[in-house]
Image: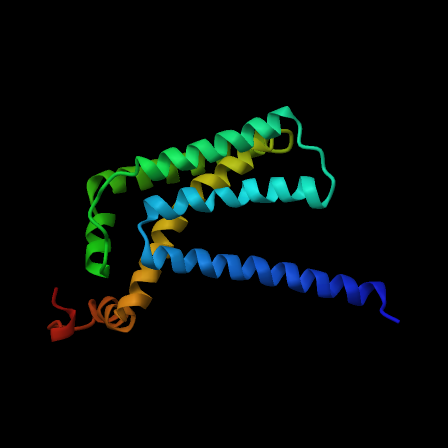
Amino acid sequence: MFSFHLCLSVCLSVCLSSVGAGEVCNFAAYMFAPATLVTPLGALSVLISAVLSSYLLGEVLNVVGKLGCVLCVLGSILLVIHAPQEQEVTSLQDMTNKLLEPGFLVYVSAVFLLCAVLVFYFSPRVGSSNILVYISICSLLGAFTVSSVKGLAIAINTGETQTHFKCYINEGSLKQRPEYCKA
């Protein structure tokens, strides 16, 4: 009665919907909690996938995999317990000030430089035989997602999106800044 393709497409739709729902929940978490708490807990999704694959799919989790799961749990616990107490960023102006600090600018420059070296030097030479090159590029560029999602969540939560967009777009063309653009 049901074809294989129909069942497969329903299963894929359910799986993709659950992944999408998980990302929406992760995005909402950045809206209401500090990134130093959300990020380590988000890393536990890999652990949950590993454990569920061993139970549901019958995959064997070897000693190294089990050790990796234990280290992932311990690392997340330690990061959450010992997260630095820093001032919570609650507005786009605070976010802009944090992103323009010299330490962050040096970090961004170092990440882009390292990515450029990986892409233009290591990738053509050893990329076909070593997957670590591409994993490193993805991990380095993925580090920007936390600050990007946090900024977008603040903009949505505070309703500052349209005002700041108008200010940044019109800044070069206006002779005098409008009142809503003055910080």
